[in-house]
Length: 297
Length: 302
Image (tube, rainbow over all chains, first blue to last red; front, side, top):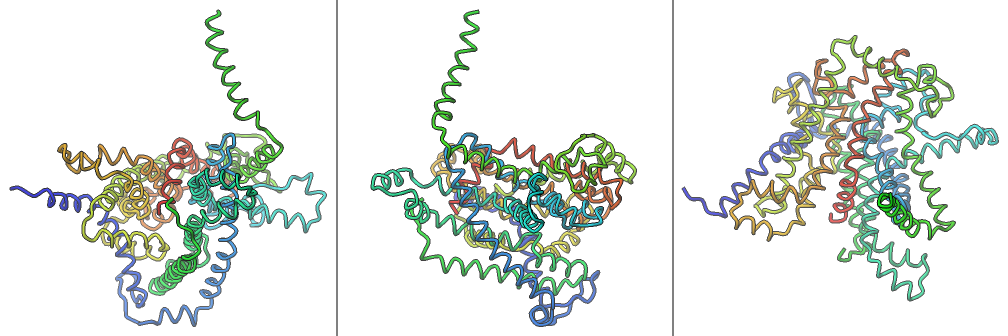
């Protein structure tokens, strides 16, 4: 039997994508649809997977009755809005520094990316003294663990002696925040770096000939050309911050699902959360569309 | 004698000259400040890793020192032998946890790379009906918090009757949207003419995929190797949910049991944390360049 070239191409194409599609459907799409379905239902028997339809009750309960969800949700949003600009400004600054021709640039880049490598898992949780906290279960006073581990670097005793306790506290707090900040900016720094390297050197040269100061060059050349990367980074940071395992809302959903075993309600919470993040992303796109400068980069 | 000095000193002096010309000549106060600043910052990122490493070698009295000290003063290997003893007395030997972790990680990394690259190849290079829609769905699932779907995923795994087997730890992690996206961005850069030429020369899809496409996108799938290694090796949630028997536990899960809240085991727990982190760091150092290149290429294109 002879099969045409085009037809053979189509068939082999589908054969190639089949394993991926099977996995994607079984472990991502089906669970997504299923959780949407469960959002409108109440689990009556966990072992038998029996559910009854209760309409929008789960959703109205989340918004109107649940005393934890809305405050946690509000906190998560507020944290995100404080954190995201900080992370963006900081990583932009770091990328500018690393973009200089410096000795050992590869080393510095590696050092700033390293936290991403380990930060995603077990160690990060342990270091932050949450969840797995092997260190925390032992120490009776959790503050011992937190000062020692989360802050990473401490103020040397020699200096600490000259500071008032209040100032010492503030300083350790700032140091701690900085450490965590570093652990969250690895990918952003890389994306910014990639963007900076895409800007042609000749632009700066011609600007220099026209007598532009570095300050003017930054605002007139670098910044406008970086807006697409800035947008990409903003969205990445947003999604990352809302799906982070340390996010309080995520922790709450997990608790509802696995400790209280209210799967229908947890699914509803998850969908409310997802829709909110999705709308936020769409809004960011809509608002920035006119301001972002696209060139043929 | 003369020849040797010629061979040794000439390159050295040349290197020194180049080094001087490139780096030393232009040194200014600003540059020195920049280095001091950056090295200071590196300490911040490296601090937690150094902390884990130095804690693993701390004797018991130093572990509970208050205020805690950053560096170890009297390094000891006792924690590691403690770790072996602590896990030996349990039902399953330590090596079993290690084997579980290594086996599932290797399987996930290998098959994830193959499956995702094959899918990406089709989406990128074949204009089959429905591919645009599939890609849109892939992109939006990137935004979904995985916790929402963890419950139904559990039921899928349980209905497939693979709970408590290696399959449960491997299968759900193969079709990762992010990996597909990353590899696809790279495959878009392969010129269509190359593939056409190969086809004219009589290559079928399978050889084309392995001989042309995969070597071309090596940086991309190297990155997938690192990311899926990290995700699987560090994964705590899925062994916890999908396995119940002690023999199926992986390293991170077993490490949780080691300390078990007793003071005497603290050293063993610290050593365990070190053992768990070390492989990711080593792998990253080995493959660093590849990953950095990929990350800086793929992001912009999207």
